[in-house]
Image 1: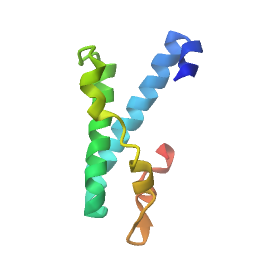
Image 2: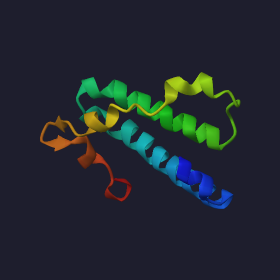
Image 3: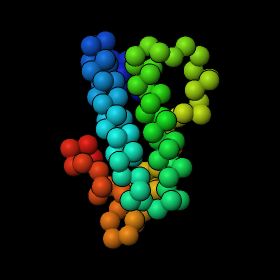
Length: 101
C-alpha cells in the first residue's frame, strides 16, 4: 500500500478498478463452480465473495467512511492455502480462468 502513495490518482483509480474487476470475476467463479469444491472450502469462498462485494461497494462509494465496521470483510488470508488444496484430481486454482490467475 505504501507504493500507492507515489502513484497518481488516475493510476490508483485504475489499479482499484482492476482489483474490483478481478473480484467480480472471482465472485462469478465462486458462484458458478462452488459445487465442484470440497464443502470444507465453502466458508472460505463465502468470505472471499463477501470481501470482493465490499470492495466493489467501496469503489462505488456505497459504504459509509467507518473502516472499523468492515474489518470482518478483510480478505481471508487462509484462502490462498485452501485454494492450493486438492479437489479430487484438480486444484481449485485449475478451475479459475487462466487470464485471472
